[in-house]
Image (cartoon, rainbow, N blue to C red; front, side, top):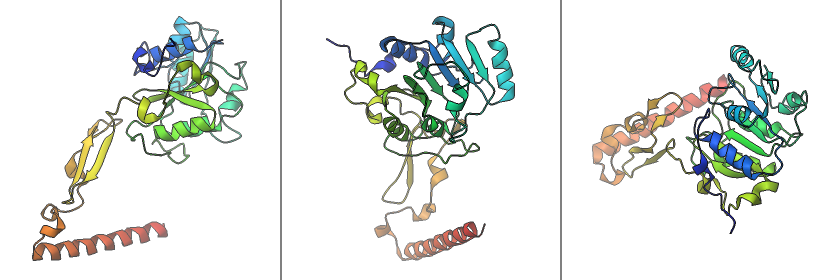
Length: 293
């Protein structure tokens, strides 16, 4: 009887990674046939801090390409691997245009076209950098998604290097499909996509995000009561800023109007109409100012 790997996140362990990536990557690469022992990681930081590839370099003798745009981090990275001839470091920003993307950087190396692992973690434009790849087709892609976005939401930030919002798991899932990849694991912050030719090896019957993603702790749900009160449930925090979110921060109606409209008295009904008129006026003014800028 063939083993089912739909719970492959259970193999998660950390040596250098953050949320079990080291163990998951090792298990996946054990299943994929004919490994070539090449990996790529960007942004690589210093090549050690929360790295998804360092464990492969140390324990499995992998050849690696590190790409880091920040000069200070790159200098530390280069120093950390100065004695390892199998590690190649580039101080570049990976773009997502036709003339400047990951393909252009990898073409400077001898890495195979279908190398084993690509790890993408640039806190924003991850979607576009993967989308822009056309020549190289890694067997396994580990890519960061925004864990605050619910599974059913499609969201991709605008393509701008100054923006750091990230993309939803669903949007990456659909991008992967269009590029010939299938989702096999969704950890707390990273999703793993396997080239579709290897997907049958994992015996996963249903790989939709809502099935494979188990950790929902970063999602904050917002809804309203019949009385107009805004209610937050779930994570209720900004994970990157370590700030708590409270119900009071998101209220639209003043406290005395947070009632079911059918229960307003005459004075409250008048106040509600005045409030709505005021809100609509403010919205129009803001819209007018935005168009004039």
